[in-house]
Length: 140
Image 1: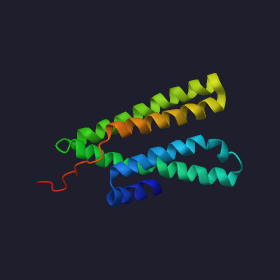
Image 2 (image 1 turned 60 degrees about the vertical axis):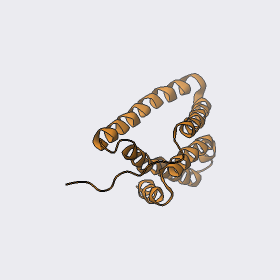
Image 3 (image 1 turned 90 degrees about the horizontal axis):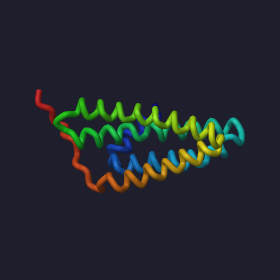
Image 4 (image 1 turned 30 degrees about the vertical axis):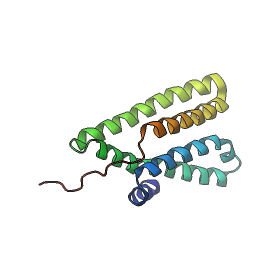
C-alpha cells in the first residue's frame, strides 16, 4: 500500500521512467542484499518493508506507461499489462524453484540479481527518455 501510494505521487512528480528505473534498480540491489536480511529479525523486517514498497512503487509507473502507449485502447492495454505481470510471476516461480533445487539458496539470489540487471538493461534499451503524456480529457 505504501509503495503504491508513494509510487503514484512520485510518478506524477518525476515521471514514470525514473520510477520504473528506481524500482527495478532498488529491487535488484535488495535481492543481492538478501543475505543481510538474515542477520536478525529487525533487519529482516526493514528489508521486507522496503522490498514490498519498491515492488509496488513500479505499478503506477507501468500503468502510466501503458496508458501513454495505447491511449485509444486503455482497458486492453491494462489487461495485457496485468496478464504479463502474472506470466512473469509464473516464470519466476519456476526459475526460482529450479535454481533452489539445483544450486540452493545462493543460486536463487544470484539468479534473481542477474535477472534484475538484465531487466534494467532491457528497460534502458526499450524505454525512451521522452514519453508522451496520456490523454486526461475523456469525452462523455
